[in-house]
Image 1: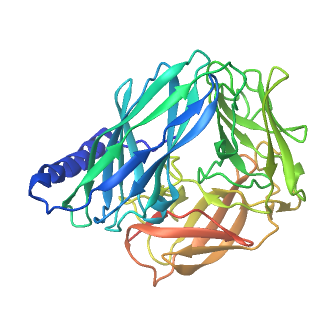
Image 2 (image 1 turned 180 degrees about the horizontal axis):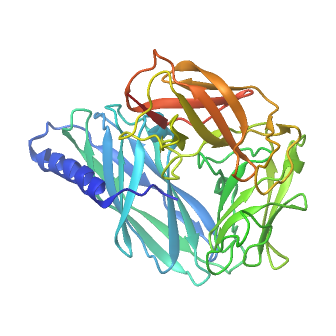
Length: 404
């Protein structure tokens, strides 16, 4: 669930931070920025959220690198960038150094300092054989200020105590129901592509639909909303990607259940919103370059920016009910429903003329395509903010478009 990066780019960014870190000895004495893990406890076979708290103290770090050491035999780990880092325009990169050690890098195409708060959220899924006290070590922290100078930073380790019997804890928690575009938790909307992160909620090996874009059962796993099966796009031991059935439209709450071969593994009472818009991103992290096509149908990127005055196509989810009313189609066909709620686009803080907002031809139900004109007054750069508003709700912070 975390962002992946090309090896060369990761090494370049790592070298920059480490080189700055070498200057630590000459830095002025200051109160160190602080990374903190809180001690937690759980039972075997459960899922829990472990945040990494960040406090800038006297410094103003703009980039942070850290290593997390954990027991990969007892737990699996997914990482999602925290809201303060998203709001600062940062991205999360990760690489496994050893089976029990993972490096995380938080940087962006800007000099904005990182806001205090939760820097990273770790979704920890415990195996059914886990037991005892496990160390979670934050090692090798490095930070730089907006000018690339070293900032003192320290990390406080945590522990995870696992005791009790399998089945006493929660396999899927509220924070593990994520918008598939933003990877943020919260209310769900009709037709929204969602990602479920939990412990042992899916089949023993990863499964994808065969012969069709979606299936209501994958490897014996299914997800239901008030008894209505959801189309599934992917299923694995600790992750399921699904589409919320349009039948939840008009409800304020819905009962979500995850089943395996008819046996209920997890259940949640989930709130329902009219729309929860989120733009898909190229690395599936919820931040960074969006899944956006230029006017010539090529993928927008810093190396392939859009022209001012040209039309771009933005792909998103969470638009809610459609007109005509959405049904759980596998693929958008000749009839292309549009959201019932008004849709608008802002690029670089400026309103963009919307030419089309509706189902994406050839893609599964729940994927929204919005064609908009890049304003002649839009700023240039490799990471210009882009946002969708659908009805009263707006898409996540941190999604960008490259403009020349």
